[in-house]
Amino acid sequence: MIDKIKYLKAKRNAVILAHNYQRAEVQDIADYVGDSLGLSIQAAKLDADVIVFCGVDFMAESAAILSPDKTVLIPDAAAQCPMSAMITAESLRKAKQKYKDETGKDIAVVCYVNSSADVKAECDICCTSSNAVAVVESLPQHDVLFVPDRNLANYVASKTDKNIIAWDGFCPTHHQILKGDILLAKMEHPDAVVLAHPECRSEVIEVSDYAFSTDGMLRYVRDSNKNEFIIGTESGLIHRLQKENPDKIFYAANEYVICPNMKMTTLEGVLHSLETMGHVVSVPEDVRKKAKVALDRMLMVGRKE
Image (cartoon, rainbow, N blue to C red; front, side, top):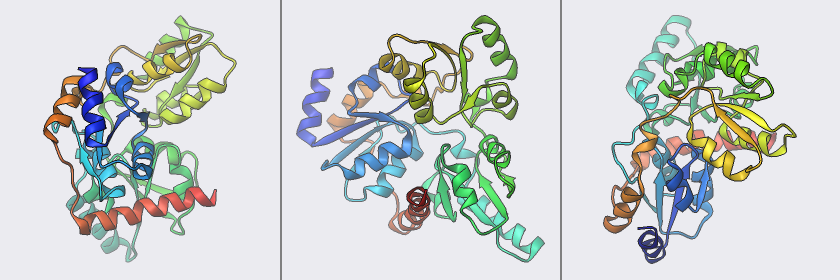
């Protein structure tokens, strides 16, 4: 099966991208493994005709936004992000109008990249979990509506004097990590450093040593002289951590930190996608242009830093 995937990848002039939360065997056959936006930015630079995105729906959409001349495929069309589904463009438009009616002024809208292209198109600027604070700080407005993740919004609110209005969405997988899980893990592994994702509950971050994005965790572990780590994010990251740091030990915050949507992608699905050129992910041009403006503004903040 892997040989067939490699053959078809070359035949299609395709690149395979896998998110850090994918199954181990899917990560291992990918050309690039990383976070969602980083993968899309990488793919846009490549001379490939086809992008096979092993992730969930909004990730493939981001690739389509940044690579409109490439064919973007997602191996399993049912692999959808539940947090992304907690907000729609229409509900966001209503929220913005309600705020304007009540205050007489517009509100700045910051959109986490874990959202649909339609929602990105309704926002002023996008952010990732690693640059969310810098993005919010870059805005002239004091009042900021942060969508769709309330946990990341609360994390940002703890780092800024801006008034953060949090959308009531969340990642069900990260939400399963409880404060008690971290405290118990620390008792069992007292020498381990606790790394939590900003999508975790506030009380989880409070009892962790550091809050990092997936890429931030990878960098910290690589550079650390510590040998044991408790990982407070989706368990798929542990495969990459262990692969890149074979002499270090990793523990999941709890055994249930598994995203079923991320795990829908299989080797069989990747092969079938390359064989049939399905499922194609596309974004209407008017939506793509607006969403790309929000992404470009975010990238400009990164350049200024």
